[in-house]
Length: 177
Image 1 (cartoon, rainbow, N blue to C red):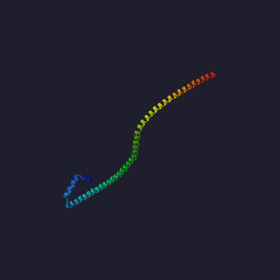
Image 2: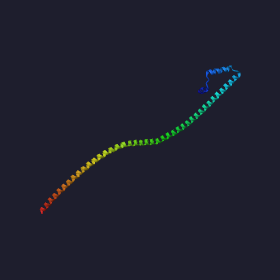
Image 3: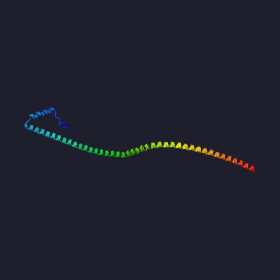
Image 4: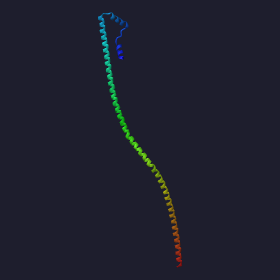
C-alpha cells in the first residue's frame, strides 16, 4: 500500500486547471487524438506498472538480503549459544569434583568428630582415674617411707639398747673375774 502511494506521489502532479483543460481537449478532440491519448495512458500505465514492478523487485531483493543476514546472525547466535553452553558445562564439571571431594571430607570430619567425643570422655575419665590412682600410690609410698623411717629409728634404738646391754653384760662379766 505504501509503495503504491510512493509511486503515485512520484509521478508529476498537474495543476487542476491544466488537468481540466487537457481533459476538455481530449473530449473535444478528434478520434486520432483520442486514440493517441489512450496510447499515452497505456504508456503511462506501463511505465507506472514497470516502475511498480521494479520497486517490488527491489523491495523483494532487500527483503531477501535482510532475511539472509538475519539467518546468518541466527546461525552465529546458535553457534555462540552452543559454545557458551559447552563452557558452562566445563565450568560446572570443574566445580563438581571439588564440591564432591569437599563434601566427602566434611562427612569424614563429622564422622571422626562423632568418634572423638566418646573417646575424649573416656580419656578424661581415665585421666581422673589415673590421677586418683597416682594419688593413692603416692600416699601409700609416703606411708611406706614413714614406716621405713620409723623402722630405721626403731632398729637404730634397738641396736643402741642391745649394744648398751652388751656393754653392761661385758662389764659384769669383767667384774666377775
